[in-house]
Image (cartoon, rainbow, N blue to C red; front, side, top):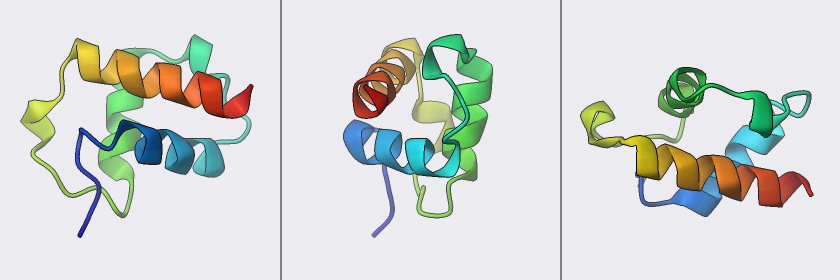
Amino acid sequence: MGLKWTDVQDIAIELAEQHPEQDPTQLRFTELRAWVLALEEFDDDPNHSGERVLEAIQQAWIDEVD
């Protein structure tokens, strides 16, 4: 079973591992969304993302690298 938009922490971990050079505080939501959709394990409706979900993923990623 793949990652869903609600798997905020797991998505953040995957992004941190795949993009270790990226500062998540400097990432635009359009880029963040594209990177989530590009995750091999991601398996959810692309249209179900919203600003709140992307904010949560970004914050979890920030917490992950701190």
